Length: 297
Length: 318
Image 1 (cartoon, each protein chain N blue to C red):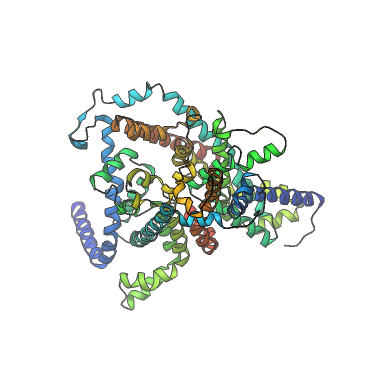
Image 2: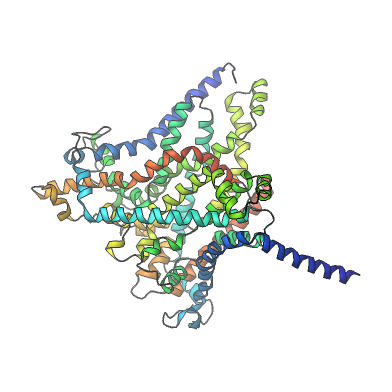
């Protein structure tokens, strides 16, 4: 709509843009700094020369990351947990959400109440641990997938989406054409639900890729560890095995220590990359997904 | 007369159920697996909650362990625990600080973004501010440690370049809540604003047009149209947040803990974890009791606030 801005409006617009720009810088700066540092030389970081752009551009940090065996193991494990886990999630979510989106299914109300109840009451740490122990899942790959097979919140969003976007007439028409439920889901529901499937795929993938505590509690073997556990050792506990870095032949201890700092920045980038690559493709569906999810009941 | 009609009703219902089963059997087949999951992983652990009232012995199992005497022994133990007040104070303190500092910001951000006409500027801001949401907690804590580290951290390098002495942020008492809360806000600001942005997009544009006709400027329109428009959403979210007031981000606090900040950073959930898994003698029953206490307080807060908000603003969660 076109109209002439008054003086007060001009002032408002000016302040608004200023505030937003400042907020933008506050969020973006740490991200830019990490990226720049990861491409700089370790001595430039230590001496405080990196401020905005990379200084003495080089890839030593990334070389160190890719030469670090346990990082690569963690990367492979996390990828496995994410891909298999998310596939299981999507399958189960559609399997429960579609029937519950059908108006006349007997028992729908009871099942919905059962789901909502789990959102309010959670048994807590110890009872869950005892169950995992009883099911003999401790230190198994499956422990990263099966206990997280469904997220009730994502189920709720999906139900609402199905109910809103799959018209009843469509079901009736295809039933007249002799379409059964399995076929209807495959041929009609899934193709119509790409936006919501994209959003929950991202949510589930993020959950799996960033999962830390489950692994911390249930995974013991080094060979099964996801990336987040390795990240904790390196980034938080500062346990960097110098032997791993030595393949880039640092001559003395100081250089090794500097390289450890550089390695951390590169590691932050490498470990966040998979999600950052996935996210721009799905970003456009966010508003729709959130809108659907915010509807009550 | 009446009884026969009721009987007929029953028969009809039975027939209805049979027909539904026959017609929708494929849907019930689909439900089988997910329902099994829900029952096994969400309801079976609830049965295990009873160990809070027992003297749990691993070899005897959940059902076989003896009831505690008195029944609320583990709860009483928590209330008289010398850590009780410290843990409650830290949990509530962190939570309230996070809520007061973090709750209004996404609203202000969304309102502000709503008046940006330049689509490119708007999209860029959204793209960048959503991104931190996808960074894992471990990496966030890692970034904090890097940025605030002495000697090599960028924050200290800036402080020193301005001629001040460097600060050992992680080794100083009292810095923990600020680092925790503000890094949380940095990470979640953009993503939490999405819901408000979506709500604002749903406000009827004719309201704005009418207001412009009446000579209202942008500030007035924001105050009288946009803000009331997102109030119901804001109240629902506030209620949900209050219910989670005792569930401060457990992972992040656990990762950020060190001996210097422990006095401020020990919260209910980290305490539950330590009692259950880290002590020399794991006390599963005691730990579960503390967890239950946390859920009950959260539940009471949600119900209470819901009642208040229904009275005050006529919008509520349920």
